[in-house]
Length: 192
Image (cartoon, rainbow, N blue to C red; front, side):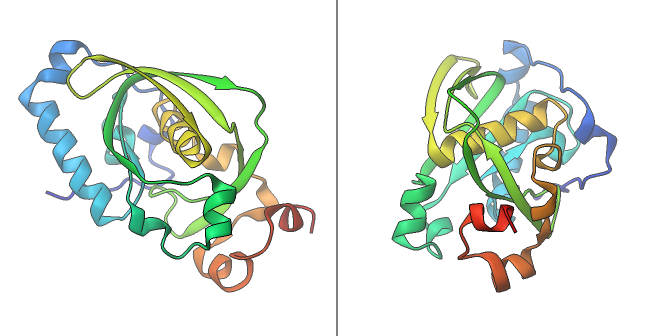
């Protein structure tokens, strides 16, 4: 079942989502929701989806970066982004700890800001403590693109959109990005 993707302007996207209990996590209802979220993510397609994006104000997000999502990137771009495939997994009640400085800048998009992209500064490395889809504790140390995805999805759980973090002068449609800026160095764009 495909779920409706809420777009910016919906109040649920600006609220801090509530934590889930282990019993709620193991419930048939929540397990079904995770399955539907996964189907919705694949259909979109996207690399992450947080429950507020489908109208549920709960601390739940899913992540999956399939190899084919990088097929239009050059080997240099993949290396620069530190991007690699990430298998499907669930994060619940995450606590993110940044490592170092927010010094990595790349374009980001969002399923809840459909049709647009902008340059967003993020931490290169992060540590996340959370529960998995079976209510078991999990620790994640992530770098590169995976760290960016985690930050983006956890922001959703705290009522934050990439629009709040972007360099406003870099905000543009996907069409203009693909036509004019896809292969331009981010630093050049930001300084123009």
